[in-house]
Length: 264
Ligand code: MF3
Ligand code: CO
Image 1 (cartoon, rainbow, N blue to C red):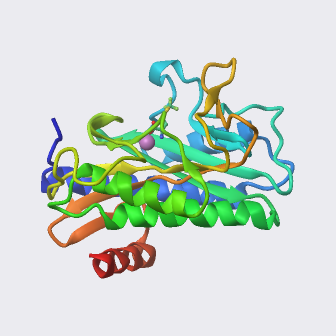
Image 2: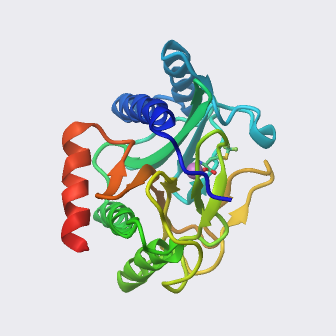
């Protein structure tokens, strides 16, 4: 069952998503050579609590930390560690969730630490554009898999592959709600999108073919042959006027919305 959020619920979700986006942005500004991923995790938890929220991932299915910090060939769910020190050229993905006033917010971004390689920069561009295309497909009346197809067809056209093991999802009173939103598939399948649905779109893009593997810690997903991976996640509200990106502040949100209407 896909929940349709009321105006009151949307107001809270919007607030939470904006707080999450601000915290993620602050984390990316702090991320620099010499800092450990555990330091970033502690910073994330402090900022979430200062905003009146609690970490959404800590304790979720036994996950031990606030933040997921995944470096280079790590795709998602990297566990922050004191001995994991950021270095120039690292590709760092940060995934963060918070719970506040009865609702969840969830988002992710990937950044280069210092000047990175053109190879890493190109992967980032493709993953980011894949998310934009997914968002542009999140229009009322479309099917869930129109988002999946928009993401996958673009990623593959650029010579990369999507992760199939993890998917986007609805969000609200639960961190993971219906519908599941795979990052691959044919268009025109699955439920239709309706105004008031709140979705997390989260393409995970990698250089390698083949499925991700799990490390012995039970969480960290890595590429099968050590290729780089990137992950972006935004919360999107389906409205009658097109997708509204909740995890972006003012100007960025409007720019994306006009992109979406141009693509319709
Ligand atoms: N953003 C991820 C998701 O939507 C992270 C959740 S996994 C966790 O699935 F265990 F770290 F919480
Ligand atoms: Co998510």
